[in-house]
Image (cartoon, rainbow, N blue to C red):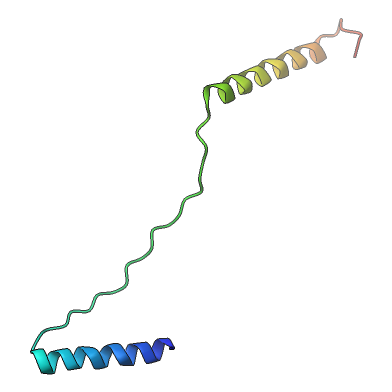
Length: 73
């Protein structure tokens, strides 16, 4: 069944309801589906600690590279 056929069928049923039962038919616009947002994982305590340790190691590495007395690099 196509959309046009479905519209015709629904209109026919609405007219039938109005004539036979004397009722009133109210049509509503389709509701917009809510926008899905990307799922984000909340960082756990271990994730936060790991990130902090990485930052500490990066700072230490930068200090070692900037140190002119360090000849091992």
